[in-house]
Amino acid sequence: MAVIEVNPGDSIQAAIDEANANDTILVNPGTYTEPIQVQGPSLIRIDKPLTVRSSEGPEVTILNGASAEERYYAVDIASSDVTLEGFTIKNPDFIGSADASGIVTSVTGDFPFSNITVRENIITEIGSPERMNVDFGSFGINAGPVNNLRLSGNRIFDIGHIDPAGWAIGIFVYGNDALNLAENVTIEDNRVYDIRTPGPVSEAITVGGDTKDFFVRGNRVEAPDEQAAKLSAVSEPFRL
Image 1 (cartoon, rainbow, N blue to C red):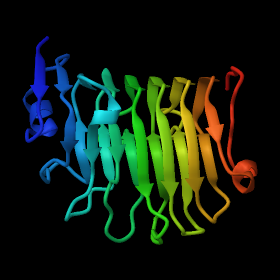
Image 2: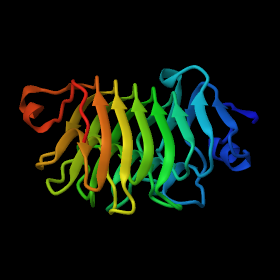
Image 3: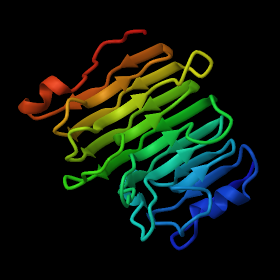
């Protein structure tokens, strides 16, 4: 199990592509925009068991999706046994109609995946106040079928658009069907705020269908008074 360091001017995706299973990608402070990849509409795609983390925390280690081409997912987790820790993840770009997400799981690959941890990240600037054609919506974390997912200590804010038909959600976890569930999920100690859409779905934390065994606790949700009725705030543990 090797540790591969990434410095400003290097490509995080190149390090992921070169790594072996169970290696650690250690990213040093800087802003990373990443060259256009061939693997799909994402800034980076983690498609093998890896730990990808910053050396000095999210305030100084930034994944910025600004691009001349459409990359509407900043980070695509497409493997089991992945840990993502300590980044600011922002500004996935979109041209035309698409959902925008800071982090997605189970978009591609042989899911449902298992044993995914996303912790101590800042996820922001997903969508924009001017964004109209959103297709499905704007999401901070958009997690599909998974077994044993842990989302902890993340700060998620400035998620939105102005399309009344679309959703804006800080954390969205869902299954696809009875064979592809989202189960054994822990969502704890996250801070979620400034989730905005003129439509009916503007929520901090949402659990979709085909899900079971959720543990949600200690999350802090902040909102202006006019948004309070739209946001889901969970302060006590419960199981679904």
